[in-house]
Length: 161
Image (tube, rainbow, N blue to C red; front, side):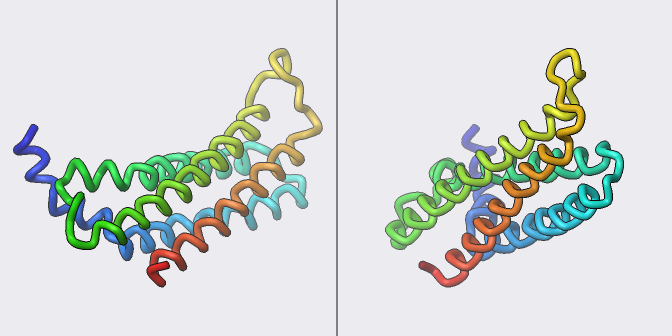
């Protein structure tokens, strides 16, 4: 175990860096924004629901995963031996921000996923026929909110506030 943690210290230090987190935020922000526009266009054009459901489900899963990763920044720092250093006050502030923004992404992604999962259930379980557009709309609103939160997180990380 100790050997594994020692081996992972350098990569983990890299991953908990505010600049790297902001870069990953930005990388994830692109599919969030693009999916909102693509799915909204599909809803308005009354396209078949399979592709928009797949897009929203995939983006929601990314949001959930990224939210969990952000929430775990403090734990990752502790496990990798990057806790208790000279800049601990600043790092603790970043940990708190990552936790809050991570929870937001996790919850928004979960509810976006729940919304589209209802579309995939058979009508004998829950009949949402005729409401697919509304459920997809709820999901893209949640993803849009997540995208705005993601952009805010990038700004905070890069400005050091």
